[in-house]
Image (cartoon, rainbow, N blue to C red; front, side):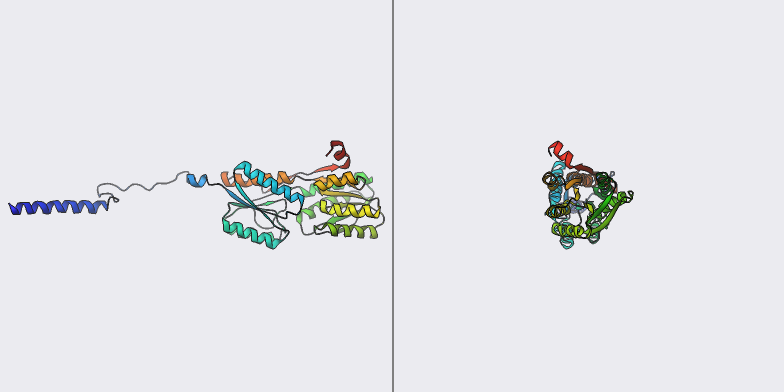
Amino acid sequence: MKKSCFLSIIATLLIVVTAVGCNGGGTTASPSTPAPAATTNEDSSPPADVAEKKLVIGATILTREHVFWTMVEESLNEKAQELGVDIIVSDGKSSADSQYAQIQDFVTQKVDAIIVAPVSSAASASAAALAKDAGIPVFSLVIDTNGERVSFIGVDNILGGELAGEYAAKVLGEEGQCAIISWDDLDICIDRATGFKNIIAEHPGMEIVSEISYAGDTNKAASVTQDFITQFPDLKLIYAVGDPAAVGAVNTVKAAGKDIKVIGFDGNPEFYSGTKNDPEIWIADVQQDPRGCAAMAVQIAVDYLKNGTQPQEINLIPPTMIDTEEVIAKGL
């Protein structure tokens, strides 16, 4: 009897030990049950938590010291809010080194995309490479980068220069000397000057007697204008590739009491006040669309990130010409 009970206990213990060993604490399938197949994501869609993650875009603009760029920043923020994405906008402070450091910060923060309005087209190439190495797409705004980017969004600056040239020819009756206040460090300003020169070259009675860079400094533009007046007493018109340069030119022409016309480029608030105060001097401006460019840049970046939409490599918004007569007529 004792022997029978002992054998019964031993058999029971063997059954328990075997059961625990097969189940591995309840996590391993028994030999008779096939292991579950590995799950796969056949459509390659990101997990729901990734797909719903709020996008973050880093943006660095050339400066906050000019109304053009404050309009760009406002539009960047407004469009980002409309599309439900976060955007961090930094002031490049007209310094390529500062802008490089800002893009480094964006890379460290692991933003989803970077929008850059370069202080220098050439200097921004290394920053663009830094972003590319981190797998962050770059979109250039208003000013193109010499580095790799997905897309450039800006103004057709050559066309703008051509519009200014055509207006100059009309005002001067296709005769007379012209001078250009340019900005050699920015490709967009070089294009603005190129377009103007292309049109003036089509009119044998017109001549560009001088072209000097003002490097974005209104005071230098005023000094350059004084040099024009001194060297070319028969000068009829000055074309400025930016409104800050036009302001310097207008002030100097007015102080000298000269009959010299000025055409600017930007369509900023200073033109509207300037042409009302001195309609015989600041006669017209090439008007671009900073808000439209900024909004387009955010839209393109978000479409690219969310939908994989491949944008055009170059997206240009055509500028328009506005003159004193139109400003007064429309009460602008």
